[in-house]
Image 1 (cartoon, rainbow, N blue to C red):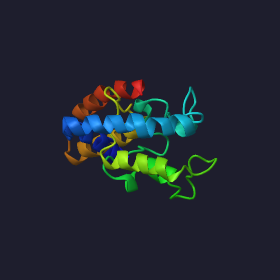
Image 2 (spheres, one colour):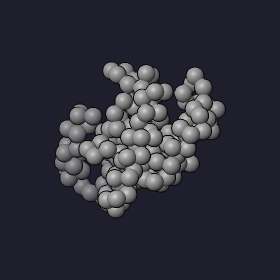
Image 3 (cartoon, rainbow, N blue to C red):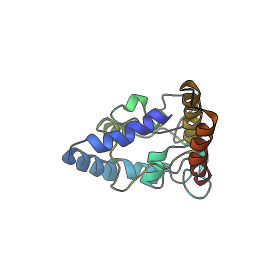
Image 4 (tube, rainbow, N blue to C red):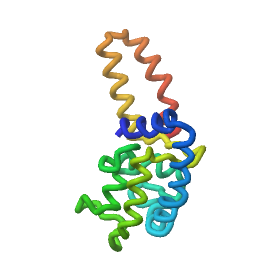
Length: 165
């Protein structure tokens, strides 16, 4: 779950400015209208279905209960393309019927080009991702045989972050 999120952030940093601008335009013309017309009714508001808020680019970047939606550059690995393309019988979105081929192609092309979101869109930290990082951190501290006092200090430093998520 953490890897697709990191790939999303890295792709946004490494792409040439013209590619990012084109990707952002593709989002506005090909992706946002599809999300607004077919997705935000269920995936927005105070309690969005599957903890997935598709009403904002930041919500899209953050993903939901099933994890990140986007693997920039790889629509086949992106949960958004899987759901919209009806490739998983347990995840058919929208549930009212499959989108037309043009809409699906536009979303897949945008993901293949790097899934560039509008400027300022940031993935919100998810508690599940934080918990996974914390487990790995504790494991690394044990593997490095860090003394208990120092390990407790490290854990105390990250504990306030968990409270914010």
